[in-house]
Image (tube, rainbow, N blue to C red; front, side):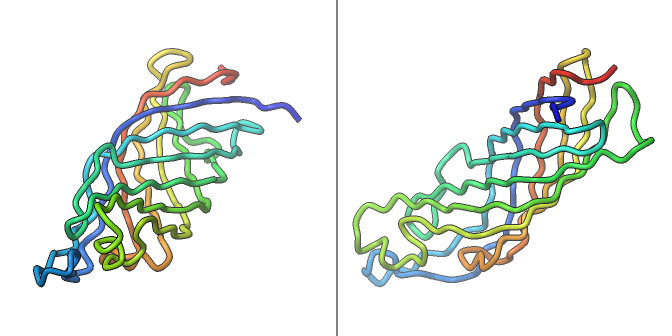
Length: 184
């Protein structure tokens, strides 16, 4: 079976999770550092292959564009997923196509400690990997027959995300994409 459509997109957005409220003596000097909430600007990239007009598979990755402070140590989160994609039949138009995604993946929190002592005080340092389930709703607004604008709302359920306050991480993004083989 050959692919009906192949597409890729690149964009920006944000993700958020609350702080777990912990205070850590990161450097062993008696100074307690607060754990932060997760946030900031994220880059977002993905690709999809549709096997027919309504069902496809895809992958996404999103990463914090800048390192942030975690109790005195710099860190950067990355989310990645592999999804099944469904476009509801009889919904949408030639220029507007909604899609729903569900899949699995992971989250990597990579820390950049100055020394081994500070890393030893932060759980998961130098890197912490977590399994996740992923759900998303997105839409493609075609600007031309191939280029499209893609707003999306993603929800990541990250197992045991103890570095932050919740296992649920909402993410919002907008991107621009290009597709080949789209039936018109």
